[in-house]
Length: 426
Image 1 (cartoon, one colour):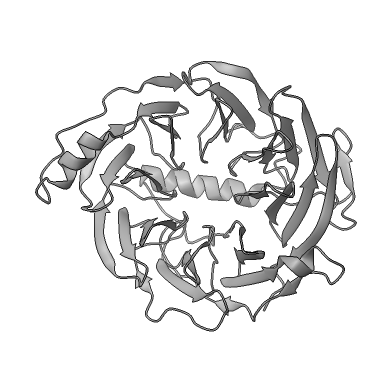
Image 2 (cartoon, helix red, strand yellow):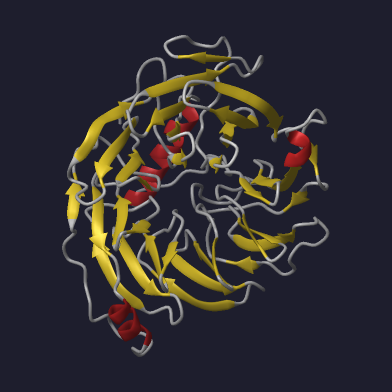
């Protein structure tokens, strides 16, 4: 894994994380070094919800944040994460490690999959917290996904869980390795990748396997389903387009006896991109017939959605590994990417012109590359949240300090509307 000399000093902690991940995948040893969570923001009904490094859930009032009143908490932050072991660490640690997943909201509740292995909810008015929580057998790295009245979440214990909104288990599905990614639900099928090298398609009602697709290495990225295809990248440095499960296949799986083997397999992908230089860690974006996907080789690839073996445009280089999924601001025609280098890349989806914005962490002034701020932002690792109507991207820059930013983007400019330190919340 190659890093530039400029990037290497700032990213030592991330390199440790990747080393730990590689060790976990090879199952040859383990370490007790602490991990750092990076929760992405979610906006619902003018409230921004986000998890903190200290294991709290925050609710920020966006109606005041976008006015002269400034950023205000709607209610006292809620402690939701306890001490943990396993996952990125071995043994137990004495203080909260926060969460990696983005919260999900439905029916007046905020649902969280936490690094301590628990799934829980907090009421959107901040008055109640689920008791008891639902305990999985390992740290949760991905996000909870809500489909109707069911929650889906993967755990480092290798299981995909289907839970009711009251956190009662409906079923679980065992894979052969850790699940660090976020499931994707489409047309009654939940898709999830595992460190056992397989992508699984599972019937949402019965929990029966429909089919599996095997790659040459662990799958840590999250799938995207569109156009009758499942798009996913692996740690084998390949990005795949695979035929999605059909309704006939799903119905056959739902009627099969529990525990009986699937009758369908996916032995071959529809198309494969093999030009990446490192692992795919994040979910892809489909926009205007093109697949946009980041890679740990510091690049963002633009592929033909019909045949991902074809690059639509030369890959966009960034100054760091790309963990966060690209997002789109359709009114501005921009695909927006956050990178481990702490910069925001705004790419015109039609012309493919790119503007690179660097924010000064102290003054919040914005400069465009190749200029550099005196106080560059820490890495952007968590998923971004796009407010398409207002042309705003919310993102969480995380390292020694964890700060939320609201960044307004247009075709040729960027403006920081506000920022909020999450690491100082006690």
